[in-house]
Image (cartoon, rainbow, N blue to C red):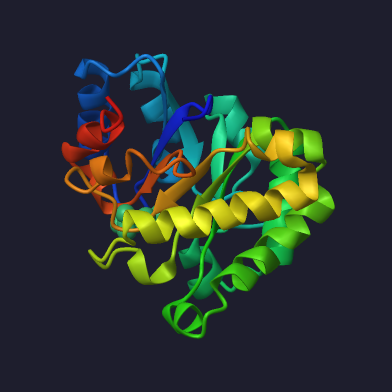
Length: 252
Ligand code: PEP
């Protein structure tokens, strides 16, 4: 049991339409959401303003899926944290495994993006996680530590708990239907928290939310309920469906 507010993120990835975004936000509007949950939905950039304008739930806010390290200028195709703020989005997902693998973003760039977002007043869902080969090789923790290290170098200790939520997303669990077991997630997430404590101190580390991500759904979410270092979920596929509400209610 912790004082950390349960957090559920919905990463829509490259999926959406005015119709789908409207359906999802209206479903959230009409659901009787627990008052003590924080929900953040991340539609594709062209739909951010629509999602913000439709949202009526005080527990729900909106996130971008990626932003750049500049506020504006000659960077064709990039997205700015200033645009997010302008349309009322409060968060951005950074370091998602799909950005790391398909778009070759390294941990240094992701740390720069994280610092830039936080300095601009946009909070960050920072994704980390190992590949299947890395888990098999027993190097999960060192992989995650190396992903986090450049962020510790750039973001001051006192900003972590307030401005960063860490999403532990083992790559082998993303989109595969093979979620980590609650025990495996807890083991890794406890170790991540201990590592964070070595960098920002035990008291601050106790305040940082650490989410599990990777094939979380309406059925398996409740099985993580008693895992004390699983402070919520980052949800991909299931965030587009009605079961997203079940995940949000999974701590009740
Ligand atoms: C994700 O992309 O962050 C994710 C966890 O995806 P899925 O839930 O579909 O595995």
